[in-house]
Length: 153
Image (tube, rainbow, N blue to C red; front, side, top):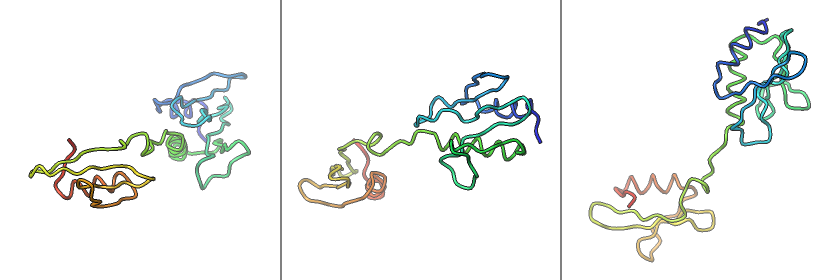
């Protein structure tokens, strides 16, 4: 079993976490960039070595009713892996709607232009008023346009 100090050293190596000292010598580590209400990644790490890591959005862990897994007997490798997975599970997911434009114009070397337009949750490529292709994601549509020799204006 890792000591309290060893666990602290491991946890503090995750620079994206912020330490918050709480009562009875316990320590929490929060992920302020969490895209969820859940901010605690490490909860109530106690000087006796007991503590918890959030695993509520992960599979393969036996959690309590708060989604926490007890780390008392974790190895260094298990602790690092679980914390990394916890951070990733709370990391903001960029949605296509937020990062993708609703309309773009693309051009090729022959100065042919195509318009990429989001319509009804689908991505359509138009040559003037004629539909050239329909795609389920922005990435699929842009991959097609790039493969056909087009680039964004």
